Length: 89
Image (cartoon, rainbow, N blue to C red; front, side, top):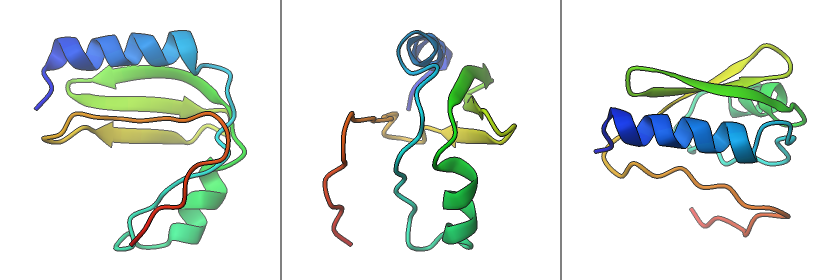
């Protein structure tokens, strides 16, 4: 499980490398309610800034929505340029 220093480093890295980039695709767990609504509120928006509250990573988007991410046990957040690979169920 990531500790506060790892979350802080990740937050700084997002601000340095992904700030200003547009979200072009999104994977939503099949058990999530309202995946269409979530996608429409995230895809096409730009990353404004990243911050954290405790171990929660907060990514503010250009439409004033935020992604609130808890890295759980694995502690991994990935991003990829270009079109993402197909994700199998």
